[in-house]
Figure 1 (cartoon, rainbow, N blue to C red):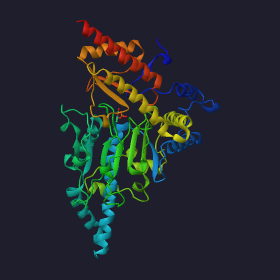
Figure 2: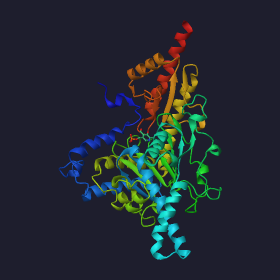
Figure 3: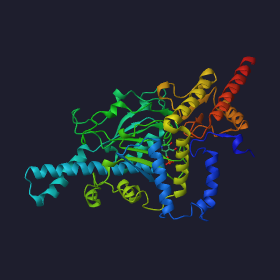
Figure 4: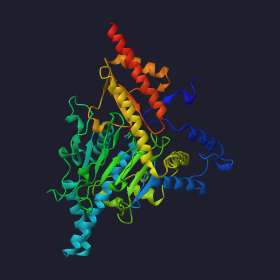
Length: 449
Ligand SMILES: Cc1ncc(COP(=O)(O)O)c(C=O)c1O
């Protein structure tokens, strides 16, 4: 049986965790801070748990330079839970903003006080029927799933697929990001429409397909500043959070399952603009949502409810929060003032090394994403020529060298290198050497036949 130091684990999530953190975690599980009780046993309402929660939040705020305009929440339900949560919550924000506006306008036009509620309801019903849209940029399997969840919750008429990368790729698969100018976003008033969609959603890094946005899409910044014209941008950063600098202020919501770059499965990080929460934006009353035939968020997925309970609405996995806190604070101590940019440099250099190795052997390997601008630094997907048998041989040889979990996602096949933060530069070097050795042997074999 190999030891941890003999293998490099390239799993796509759950993913490798730093060994020193796992070592302290085993102690924390048994007896946390000399309390005689393990951290997973302590009450989530104890002062000790509050301290874990607050220090993890503070470290994350510092590492990612999260501005005061944004609140950090710890949620449960993973990325998949957030596919639903963003729909419930941001539709709630849309309804509340529209309700407030309708009420103010009706009062200003002299509608009698006792008639206002009925008229507001009528107007909201009409606006929902004609104007409520959610925009999705579908660039891979995860944004596709998120858009399908929105259709499930609200119906297909409300979901606008502003772009689907499969329609522009040569083979009808996900391997590119269509140009921003081609996105069919719901129009703002300035563009001649009735106001932007309730949100625009995208997945910053598509884990299955190996496509990553190079940066914040400038097209989404249009209209920023004015409340009813602004595009509320939501990003799923489950597979690239903590791997590069992010201008958090530009996003309405960022979410990420912890199990790739941050820690253990079971915890979800959420960064949300405070102005979308009470008191600035009150929660629409459930009775109003019932009357409008819109879904009411389950309490466990409601951002205002989780926020008002400081992420302690129900039994949060404090041990998971602690592990995340350890990972985040170890990045802070390693990179100092560079913060997450320090880790970005490491992630980029590992990705460069691996892509360069694959590119050296064009006849042997085919990188799935040909457009270099949108190649993921986190999930490097490629095929081995001539096909299945060669891929099996590649995986077998890799395992023999302790290079594990390189099989592509079952829906797309091929090979996938997940280059998350806990994969060391040395581990990437070992893999790069193996990529060369395998190709060298395959080329020699082909030459001799
Ligand atoms: C980008 C992305 N979003 C969402 C998910 C779904 O996350 P979960 O399994 O935590 O629900 C994944 C899972 O790998 C993912 O990679």
